[in-house]
Image 1 (cartoon, rainbow, N blue to C red):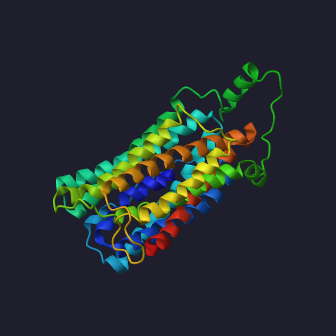
Image 2: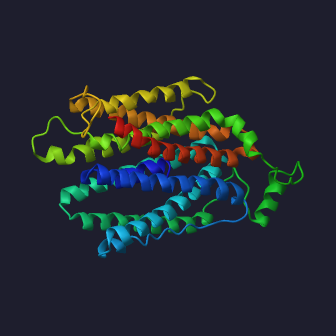
Image 3: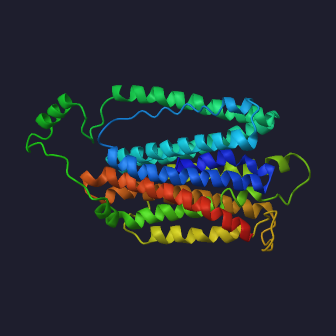
Amino acid sequence: MGGGGVSGISQEATCEERGWHSGVALGSRLTTGEVVGVGADTVVSNLLKNRFNSLALFLPPSAPLLLVGLNPVMVFMPLHTSLMLFCWTFGAVLQGSLFGMAGLLPASYTTPIMSGQGLAGTFAAFAMICAIASGSELQDAAFGYFITACVVIFLSILSYILLPKLVRCPFIPSPRPEIQNMEHKHIMHHSDQKKPQDVSMLKIFKKIWILALSVCFTFTVTIGTFPAVTADTKSTLSDGGSWDQYFIPVSCFLLFNLCDWGGRSLTAILMWPGKDSVILPASIGCRLVFIPLFMLCNVHPRAHLPVVFHHDCFFILFMILFAFSNGYLASLCMCYGPRNVLPHEAETAGAIMAFFLSLGLALGAALSFLIRILV
């Protein structure tokens, strides 16, 4: 999700090869699912995060449906859309919980979460290219995507089960009473045990609103352009050969995810500008220029704007800067958010930042319709 949303959209955006109307249908489902996920993230993650531990079991029942002959209008589409809403909703809750827990830890712990989302997108792009290179039928390739996702989810569940057996992180208190008693004897013996302090989401938002809106704006610009506009870009070096077949999978999806992953990972060694610097929101605002730049590339079909940047190198250069800035600036915002509040407010701050990240994905998906029509 989140940023995970970007990788998910990258994996499913192969529908652009089937035409504009298929892309609109996909965008509509993604937008609806993301909006529902945002609501669930707000209501469930923030209200229930301290009351119980949950294990999300995403066992996609839609995989077998790819091999069954169903009426695409009456049966498959409603069922598939419902399953997407289900997965996006719980994915948003999971994402909010992860960023909430990461908010309790140093900023270096948020970077691996952001970087992992970028890695997932890169893996999806490689899978797309492998499917094209193998010459598999569309149905077989789609089934392979879903089975791969099931395997990854199964490994994630195993990792979750093994997680409590690892060495306990020293930065957060354990929920087990006996370990809490040891902590207070050996670490907090100078003070009495305090009850959890109530936190106000509005009060916390006032402290991090610039960073929250910044990460929201970052993903609004990104999803508003990628892949709705970028996936319809045509190569000007077209020769009827393999370059036509691999241009979008490589120059759009793979390049975006690699550079996005690199930008997210860079924050592990470099965090500039600072959390209170005006350069950060100013840099995010400057990313708005990528929307007209991509609109003026060789995007087809088009009805209103002329093509200004004909050569493929312009599109590739724009994509590198676009993707790297998305990963780096979004990761900075997510790392800085929980650092701007008091320690007992950090978890809620992380969940709020995840909410605005998801909100940016939803707004960008909705805005992509308008941007594509204006081309």
